[in-house]
Image (tube, rainbow, N blue to C red; front, side, top):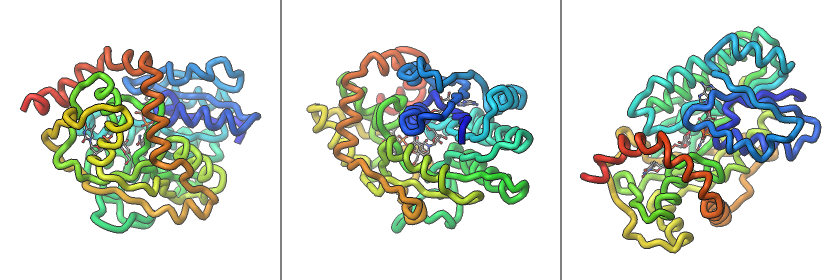
Length: 338
Ligand code: NAD
Ligand code: DAU
């Protein structure tokens, strides 16, 4: 692995992964390839913009010519694909972009990778492809039963990566990560949304009864898991990367409010998300056998995250003053009034 293309590197996990890889591998060359949708943010890449081992290219993973040029001109040998439409609520409002990027985009990346002899291709997938599980934890061989347009589109990319291994012998690998949080996460996802709303004394719109369970994973642990799978995973296989940290939404909200010293009266129960998955849980045995495990405890990770949003108001205020407001109104306007 010398010349790494990180697709979607201007987003939340992707930009954290760029930093992780530059810190860990002194001889690596990284090209970030990103369309810069609403979620792609050049500010996320600013900390390493002067690093001679890093370069940025704007482009769509669903465009053959643009992907082909990026691969050829930079002698890319390895691809890690984070590029995706990622927010479940947006996929319910308008699934179109999800099919474009998460289905067609992954196909185009795989096809151009095949033509250009890419040595290793890692598709970043999600625990949501399994659907909801009332008890126990999903293993990699369990059925894929996605419930939202987002999850179904991610399942498609995940399975296409597998098919390119089986059919063409390509070295493709899939990771299925759980709910990730940390610095640079766009404030539509529940943790940064609730932290920034609380800092502004705005209501925290909690869906349904708040008893849904998510398995929270700190972003540095997610990056380390992806790297472990990239280095040592078996081609054609999928690897769970879970936080081993299940929490009810309502409990996480109370932890946040304590850290922020804000009142519980900010919590506003609102109409639930349609098709809302009740519980996610992953069995990490397979990725643990690669020598990886989650390292950062939840309390510490939450403290680090809250402290980052408190110290970087410039970052999220810029986002919240733009296109974001239209989305917020479409998603929450009626819910918060009702
Ligand atoms: P994000 O929404 O913060 O960033 C997505 C990035 O992809 C943005 O920079 C955006 O500009 C880029 N992008 C979107 N469409 C593109 C296209 N057509 N071509 C090129 N670039 C495009 O996402 P994230 O939360 O960092 O998630 C990254 C990946 O990890 C996604 O594949 C997601 O499904 C997966 N994942 C996320 C989580 C989580 O909790 N956030 C958990 C498990 C897996
Ligand atoms: O599990 C991995 C997935 O985690 C990733 O694949 C997705 O890209 C990522 O968005 C995330 O999906 P979720 O739907 O679990 O995340 P979200 O932050 O949207 O919601 C987390 C929980 O909080 C979920 O039960 C819904 C609830 N929620 C969310 C929002 C945005 C609320 O109660 N209110 C809200 O306003």
